[in-house]
Length: 449
Image 1 (cartoon, rainbow, N blue to C red):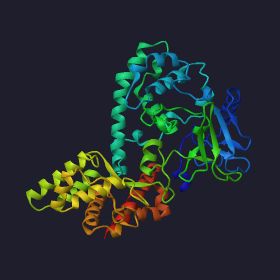
Image 2 (image 1 turned 180 degrees about the vertical axis):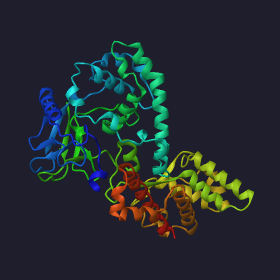
Image 3 (image 1 turned 90 degrees about the vertical axis):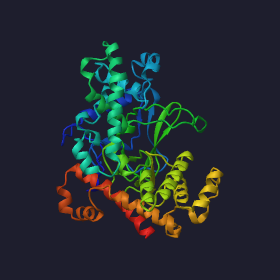
Image 4 (image 1 turned 45 degrees about the horizontal axis):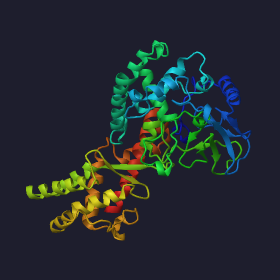
């Protein structure tokens, strides 16, 4: 069960064990100076998903697993149309910031002599990507209702379509010598967006560059072969000349080498990568309470129009303080509230007596007066003021109503191995997402009762 649930890639037809793509890739690595440690192997055997990387011998923390020279990284700056992409940079700006890389991929994929062809041979089959954006809409809504994924996918699909028709297609049509008709397709563009979402890397900004736009994504051969675990045993390090994958834990012989894609909840993993970590493996899992749900819960407690008006006044003030918004969510982890400041301030403002609110508003908030008893660590929630606990509890109950099924139904499915095994792969993945979120929400119910 765990192995299938962590599946990350489909490498060619099911059951295909063709060694040719790996041999071609390894020969390419030698040509471009991509050094793999003799202690690791690229393999489909002994990995959780399609291709992965396995330790041939035991590896110690700090050991170098492989080093990728900057020239072997595929980006808008290293592709064969880099000069054109740089000259046209202004026309290729988009909300995602991914258009130049995607155009680089569209060009290299159909270029007969692309230097990256042996690397592309290890890519998953583009028509078999498992991101929810490729599921039928009805299935996505039915299986993932309440999780936040359908809404995230709808936004993605709208922005991909807009980006393709307003920027990408006109650019390809203006350069027909560089882009054959077979790559001028919205479907292929969708697939490449999903691939970049799942397989690219983004070099972190230096601390002093925090104000800058994020770095554009990079395709990093070898690094993108590693599968993900929250409890990973390797990490990618960036240096001026190369990118280095280094072991962070002892890795016994025969064990798979895992990178991390960041601290990601299961809904983010399925949305961006098309897989989840089965409960309870993902220690980074979270559940969201929509900010407007807390407002709705507070409105349930108002009896007369004056109280409702005062509540909206409080809400508008929280918006002004940038603590809440119509689109935002409070994020709850297993051990802590990740948006602690926002939720603490919201509970405080919505629950304080009217006189106190007037004073609070006149002073534009009270600055940093955080008290220990107001902290939203999981262990401290039972000690919160009764009014705060009640509002939090009502918000959780409203959130649980957004799912199509209850926790007991999910528990029954998960505890019956025979029934679980008969579920489709998508049903299993979606069940794990829903179950992890509901476990966090039910923990909050217990803490606020």
